[in-house]
Image (tube, rainbow, N blue to C red):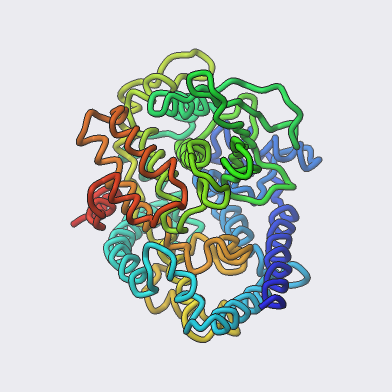
Length: 515
C-alpha cells in the first residue's frame, strides 16, 4: 500500500506537469486577416496574451477564457478547427508529455489499492463514504439526466447543422462548429451579444457583488489588505463579522502561463479550535483573461460566484478540528455550497445593483438583464451532455478490470451511450485533471450533478420563504451546512436544513430539460 500510494503521488504530479506543459507550449498567432468575427474584447485579450508570450500581435492560447470565446466568435472555420484540435489533444500529443500511459497505470494502481482493502473495485471503495453510496446509484442519476439531455442536444444539433448549411458549408456539424453556431443562434433567439454584455460584468463589479451577497446573507464584511502575496496579480481581504476576525480571503483571478487551467478553491489554513484557535486563510483561483479593465462573460461571473461559494464554506466553518472543517466533506456534497451560491448571480436585484457599465457607470438595462436571465438554460443540452459523458467515463474507468488502453475504453463508453458526433467530452482522459491529477474526483466527477440536485432544491427553500435574502433561511443554511464541515453525514446535514432529501425533478426543471 505504501508503494502504491507513493507511485500514485508521482504519477499524479507527472500528469499535471505534462498537461501544464502542453497548455503552455501551444499558441496560434493571428494575423490581422485572422480576426474575422472576433469582438473587441477577444482581440484585446488575444493581444494581451501575445504580449505575455513575447509576440508582437494577437495569439490564441489554450487558456479556457481565451479559446472558448475564440471558438464562439471566429468566422474562420479552419482556425476554429486548428484551435479545437489542439485543445482536445492536450495530454495526447505523443512524446514526453503524453498522459495516456500514465492514466492507465493510475487506474491499475487504484484497482490494486481497492483490492488490498477488500473492495471489488475502486469505485465501490471510493463511493462507500459518499452520499451516493454505490456505483449503481451514481449511474442511475447520470442516466436519468443523460436521456433527456441527449434528446435536447440532438434537436439542437439539427438546427445548428441547418444554419451551417445556410452558410454554404456541407458535411457534418463538427465539435469546432457547435459553439460558433450556438452563439449565432443565441444572438438570434435571445438578442444577446456577449460583447455588449461584458462591459457590465467587470471583475471588480462581480467581486463586489459576491461580497455584497455574503454580507446580506451572513453579515460578512471585507476589508482590502496591503500584504505581500505569492504573485503580483493576487489580492487579499480580511473578512470580519461584527468586528470579529473571521478569515483572510485571497483572490488569484488571471490566467498566466505558469498556472494550470480551470478554477478552484483552496485553504492555505483551515478553521480550527484545537489544538489552537485559528481562522481560515482561503484562496480562490481562476483563469480569467487579463484586461484593463478585466471584463467577464456571464459564465466567468458564474465561475467567480461558484468558487466564492466554496470559500464561504471554508470561512463560515465552526468546528473543533481542521480535518473536519470547511470543505472536508463527502465529495458529492462539497459542490452544494458552491453551486447554490451561483443562484444569487441570477437574482435581478443583484445585477441591478452591481452590473454597471465599466465606462459610464450606467446599470445594465432591464431588458438586457431579463434576456440574459431568460437565456440561462440556452444550449443546456450541449452543456449537460459534455459533462455527463465525462462523468460516465470516469465511473466506467473505476469499475471492473482497469483498462490497459484508456482511449479505447473511453471510446467504448461513448459509443454505448450514443455520444453525439458534434459534442466532445468536457474533459477527455489525457487531460482529465479532476480524475488523474489526484484522487479527489476519481470515481467522483458525477458529484457536481449530485450536488446540483440539492442546490436546485435548496435555493427553492429561499424562494418558498421570504426570497433570495431571507434571513431565517440564511441562518439555517449556515447553522446546518456551512458551519458544520464534515462533522455529520452529508444526508443528515441536508435533511436538517431542508427537512427532506431532494429528487431529480428540480434539476431537470432548472436545466430546462423537463418534459
